[in-house]
Length: 126
Image (cartoon, rainbow, N blue to C red; front, top):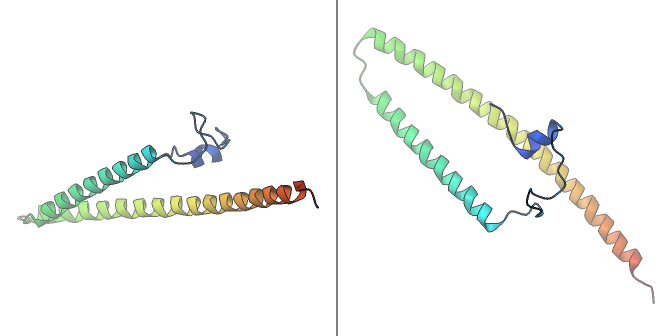
């Protein structure tokens, strides 16, 4: 699975992030974008529930032959491997996002300290 997040594009050097979105706004998330994110999360939750129900119904079907039992065990093992790979990928992406968030916090603190220093030196002493 290839990632198209701004982080992955930035790591590959394809795009530089200048603090503005494509429409010229700063990186602050708008209420419309927040509601879109919530809508996408609800969609993923609904899909997950549907898949869970399908899985439970499929596994509840009785096994009638030894071939069915062997096929089911093979299918379960393959599905478990897919789940484990997905979990590992999510952990990997979460670790990258944590590192990036920490990096942004350090940059923010550096910029805030610099802005404060500039304000204090710009004030005339009386």
